[in-house]
Image (cartoon, rainbow, N blue to C red; front, side):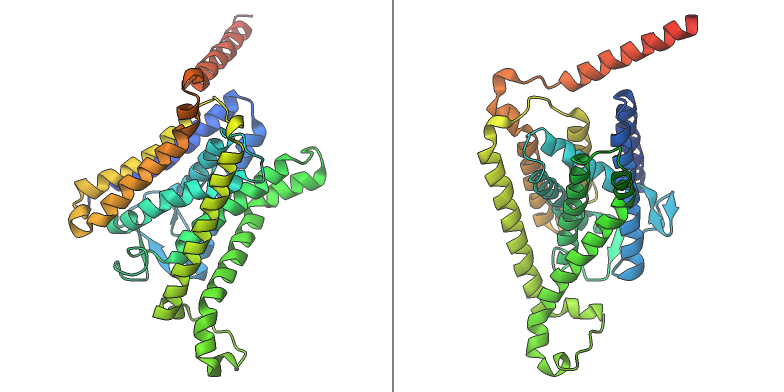
Length: 343
């Protein structure tokens, strides 16, 4: 199947454009802490991608990307930053307690990955070390769990740091270490997930278990029994994640804000639409119609999550309020610059 290079360009350019757009908006808002969080998230994205590709060797990126660092496209690191930060902006609209928002962030992100990853490998963006008909249509289940852990770890840490005094030296030190601490949390979570999935297999093969030697043979993760337990664990994790988010939305339904974040909506919806369009323009639907169904369903779920506060409060919705405020603030800042220049 012939793959148009335009998808590489659109994907890569989109990562840079939306990252810069969010940074510019933070500059207009004079939100320097927000800029630091965004850059930290991008650093975190590059650390986890470089670390995962060199430690696990379970996937590799296409050389068709233009800007790379240690064989990892920089747009991927920026993309992580955009996805995580836009997911956080989305959950902020619901005005939930900060301890619950990371769970909604993780759900928003994994819904995106469920639709995106299986299509991205068919576009040649990256390659997993398993066949396309294995696990989640060619994507290991531990990657889906990894998406949940990545967003959960970073979002929870950043939101916790927001509750601290930013002037304290310890808080600044933790903010600098946030990408590394988040990556450590991801590694611990994936290690626990893998060990639980492998344990039944090891018990059945008790002779190897009695040797008390752990060999990091990643091929064992593809064993049919281990794959079954990965499916079970992923299902349990997703069920609990949905349970927490739905319970939170019901309990705090009267707290929903009325401020629609256009950048968050555009960025996340754009990613959904990009890969949905690829299914039909590249003929992927002929190979696997189920991927088209999954992509449409996840897009609908994404739209419901984004628009739910405004479906409930239809009479008091100001969708372009953010744009209006940003424009007025920008005009005010421009007027100040002009006056200072004329002086």
